[in-house]
Image (cartoon, rainbow, N blue to C red; front, top):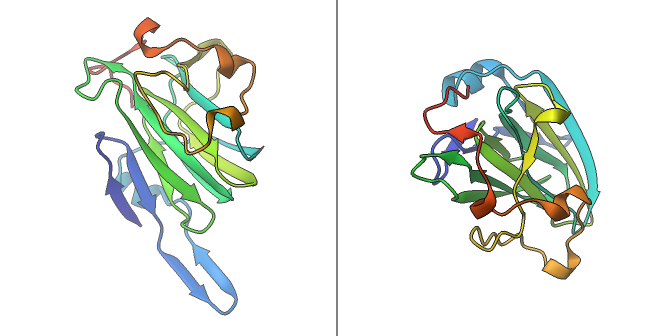
Length: 189
C-alpha cells in the first residue's frame, strides 16, 4: 500500500496495490501488519456501512473521550468527498481541514485519527460507504460541528440547495461556539 501524507499530521490517504486481469481486480483492503508498520499501531473493533444518495451530507461528527474513535473510511460504490477537521485545542492546525475524494474506481482510503471531526458528501447517484473504528459507538458521547461553518469554508462539491441532512446534522454548533473535548497533548491513541 502507498501512504500519502496530508497537510495535517496523522491524517493520511491510503492507496492499495491493485492487481487486475481479464477477470477483474483484487486488492488487500486492510492488513493489520501493513497498517501498523506504515501508518501506526491500531486495533479496529467495529466496521460500519452506510448507503446514501446524491446530495446526502453526513457530518461533521466525532465521539467525545473516552469513547473517541479513529476511522479508516472507504467508498465501495460511487463517489464521496471525505473531510477531516482538526478539533484538538492547542494544535497548530486547529480548525483546519483536509479532504479526499474516495471512489469505487480509485479504491483510496482515508484515515481520520481521534481528535478530528469527520464528514462526507455524496457526489454520485448512490454510495456505499464503509469504515472501520477503533472504539465502539457510544450514543452518549456523540458530538458534532456545523457542516456549513463559514470559518471552515468547506467546499463539499455539491450545491448548498442540493444538500440533504439529517435533522441532527442541521443543528450543530459552529467552531467558534464549540468547546472541544480534545487537547493536542491528550493520549488519543
